[in-house]
Amino acid sequence: ELSLNRPLRFVEHLKNISGTEKIPMIVGADLIERMLNPQIFTTVDLKEIEKGCHLLAAPRNNIELESILQLVKQKRGVTLTVTHIMPKAIAPNLQKFLLISSTLIRRATQAGHVLEAFLPKNAARLIQQNSLYDGSSHVFNFQTVNMNELQMRCSELERQLEEAAKKLQKLLDQLETQNRAHRFAVVETSAGGQIAESCTSKSGASQHFLAGRVLYSLEAQKQFLGLKFAENSSLSDKQVRQLAKVMQKESGADWVLAETGMAGPPSPERRSKKNGQCHLGLALSSEVKYKYLELNPFLTRKEHQLLFAIEALIWAESVLKEHN
Image 1 (cartoon, rainbow, N blue to C red):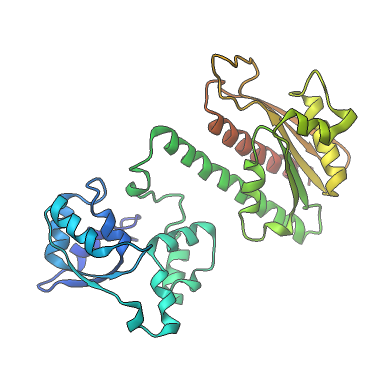
Image 2: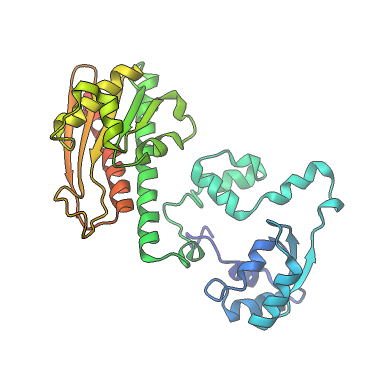
C-alpha cells in the first residue's frame, strides 16, 4: 500500500499473499453482502476469492449470512468458503472487538480520532505517520458507485467544508495558546446550519465555539433583530452587520460570523434575481467586516448552502489572520 501510495483492494491483498492453501481472512458479513454488487466485486474478483480465500465472517447489522451466501452463489456463480465467527465462543471482554471494521477505522482516521482504540499501537502509528485513509488522497470506488452526479458533487463540497473548518480550528488553537481572542459564535440564515455543524463536528470545538443560531425564516430574523431588522433589505450588508452585532452582544463571543443569502433553488414560481447571493459579516471587537458573494444562481439549494459555508469559513480564517 505504501509503495503504490493507495490502499489495496481486497483481491490485491489476496494475490500478494496467496499460496497453495486458502488464506484465512477475517471480514465483516457486510463485505460478503457487497459481493452481490458487480460494480464493487467483479466476476474475476470473486473467482480469485473462491479459489484462494477462506473467509472468517464476523456478524454485522443483523445480516443473514446464509441467505447472502445463497444469493452470491445464485447471482454471481461462486461458492465461497466461509466460517461464521460466533461471538459466544469469544471471551466476553473481547466480543466488542468484532464490531470493528475497516470502514470504522477509515472514518476514525478521517475524524482525527485516536486509533489506538481500534488497533494495536504499531498499526495505528503506521496509519498516522503515512497519512493513510485521511480522505485527502485516497478515494474508494465503492464509496461513490451508487451516488448520482449531485450526490458526488455535494460529497466533494462537504469534504472542502470539513477542510475549511479544520484550518479555522487550527488557527483558533494557536490564538488560544497566545491568549488572544478565539471564542466565537455563528448566526446563519440560508446556509441552514452548515457553518455551525462543520465547526462543532471537530474534537475540541467547545474550546472555541460558544453558540449558533439558524434564523431560516424572515419571521425568525425579525424576532431576533427586533427594530434593527431591515424591512426592505433583508439580503444586504446592513442586515448581515446587524445580525453579527446582535449575536455578539447576546453570546458574549470574541467574534461572530454572520451569513444571510438566498440558496434557492430556482423555480418557475420563484424567479428572484438574488438567488445565489450571499452576504457575510464578521463582528470583531471594534468593527464588522463584510464580504459579498454571487454564485451561479442555477445551482441547487444544497450546493449553495455548502458553498456559502465554505466561503464563510475560508474568509473568516483570512480576516482573523490579518486582524491578529
